[in-house]
Image 1 (cartoon, rainbow, N blue to C red):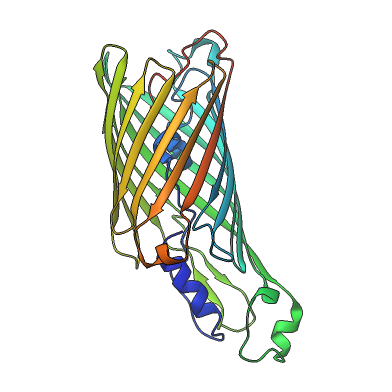
Image 2 (cartoon, helix red, strand yellow):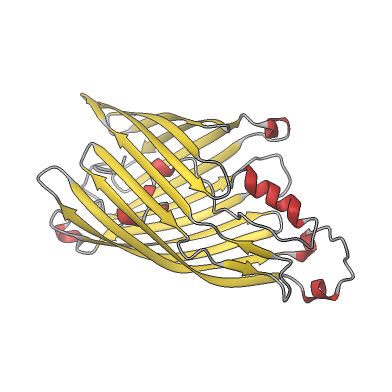
Length: 311
């Protein structure tokens, strides 16, 4: 979650008020799992790709954001993956920031269209549900005696829809996606004093892999927009050595840098870690952010250790 989400927490503490601009979880290593942001990547590889991730943001700050997620996607016909045009997948996300928690589940599908011998274009859509909960016990209320707050925690279940495009080859990708297309507003009380609209999230990303023998160099970038926050963008550089080890760095506009590293332990198992160095005023209180991804490639026992398309 960005600094805007932190401001939202401060506004909530001054209830009653109308609040806007709630954002989804933030990820540093999205380039290691672009499917978490774009459903068009479902089935892009020739095996079932399972990812388990944990992120602890702004460690050292009480009630800072913490996120756990799992994603899985696969070609519909994994036995003939090169001829397969349909991919399926899903994701589950649990996010906690102070008194606010989000549980999200989504299933998705993608269609991969071969444009020529080198390039493909995939279209993906996802649909699911979001459950938002606001814990009253974790708030300092202006009027704790107000009977509306004696009801306990506020919660609401709302539908969610996402969509994306992914143009790719073995060494190039360009993608765009949008999350929360329905822009549902959560009404946490019978009054309108706890309204939290969920804005649409837009992402655009591109990368190219340069090959130097057994060494790959992959620069990439992403532009992100969530109204009313300003446009944000990341610039990444990743170097991979002999399909065994990779390391990289991310520069995030107005928010610092992150260092990343990963290992392809076997064709079935891989792991990656990122550490964010905070460059904003939060650096006086935060010890940075940590993110870990465990990857399990099912039915890839004799395949390559590293992904052939998403890298």
